[in-house]
Length: 142
Image (cartoon, rainbow, N blue to C red; front, side):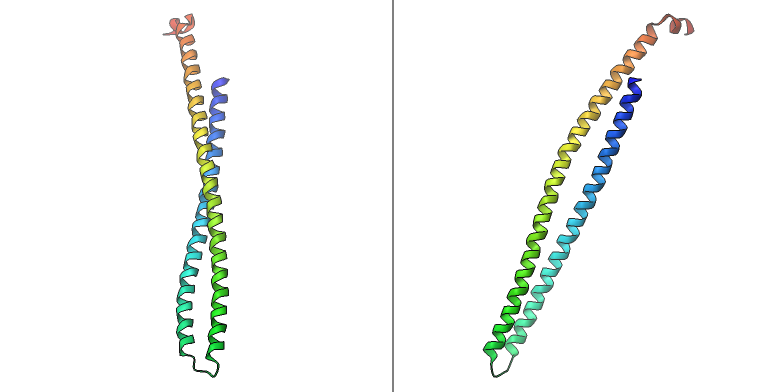
């Protein structure tokens, strides 16, 4: 009957919503972990850079300029790599933010569908109760 169909439709919508929410939360957690890891890597790189600069200043060789230049090149390459990684993680984060926003819109739509189905169910229930209340069999049984 219509009531059972509406209830089943509601359960299907709710289950879909729950699954999508779990997937979105897992994706968001993954991005947050990646961002934390990248931030930690960047901080560690900053510390390593400071150590290398101190070592470079302490170098006492015949060709200090060449040694400093070599260290500078290495640091520049490492920094560029970290910047690329940060940009990649930021882009991934932006993509997940967009997905989460789309999910929120879908969730609102599902909630509207749920409210509509519940209202239809209530109307159907009132109609059935009204028919049962006005039926002669019900009046005789009561």
